Length: 476
Image (tube, rainbow, N blue to C red; front, side, top):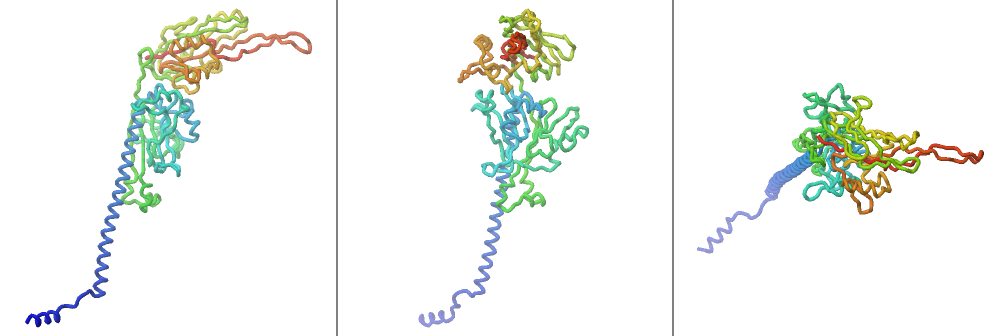
């Protein structure tokens, strides 16, 4: 019976295997499933790439904005005129010709302006394009202070990249100061951009020319105290290998286009106040070379050294030094010092010029010596401040200073000897140091080879800028 049953099972068992049609249908269905799953996986990976790159860009831009704002807060003023930047950022302009400063910060104790600017990323750089914000200034110590070794030596400064992925091309409407439309009476829309706010104060855009404005520009209030920072970054370069194209993105809106650009707008206030050597606050001022007060302040004259040469080989220290208030009238002098010593404080209002005049009183008993000089006689006076890049060392002004001059300046704490034997200035923030060269004329006898007769010609002594040394100290 069992054998018969097994034979019946064998006889009625269905045929084994798949037909070709069944295999093709199964393969097609499997391919569709794999494609759907694969497309979904690629989409998820791409979205993740977009999110990561955009998030990283936004984080970097926010951090960079905070870093710039923090340094602005440590500054005393922000430059608003290119002519001031040219006078006070000479090393930057020499090292980076053709680059446009966006921010130029006056930070007390630093010889030149700290400059922020935009640079195009070179093909061989590690930075991601298209642009990068760079900072030119002294390096920082581990505790966040500016390096003492570099504060007074702009030649040692390097440009460092702060953040990359900067936009280099903006639409015209993106180049305007936010909530500060241009004043059409002062702006031409091409090379000049000046805005006027509700309080009547003017704002200057850097760069001024519209063609130079990129993804990082600043708008600075006329009082040099407040800056609006505008920064636009892009993550487009991160997506080029994913099939995105810059021109197509700009021409056609895509679901990723909003994520590819990110803008930051913030305000930062320059609020540093300086304590002078007398323990008082220092008014804002500029020197070129006479002192012009940008707000009300006081100034005192101290004549440290006077040794005027005379034609008979003697010297004279009978000098009088005083401020002449330029806009009050001729002969209006204040703060006078006779000989060496310190004069009384003189008060100046905003915009007044502290123009010092010096004269030698007895003229060394000669009537042909011209011994009267004012502080705007740039050929006869050199000066040094803690942020003046032209004269950073005493030896820049007088190559061979006398031991007496070195001793007096050292006693006042105004110089210190460097490792190479020269002398660095160590001036406080509220002091300007002046070196005066009187125009020393004398009659030099000359023998005429034809007539064999003696004649006398005026000769000028070569300048040493060691006849009078004085300094001006300013307080509020």
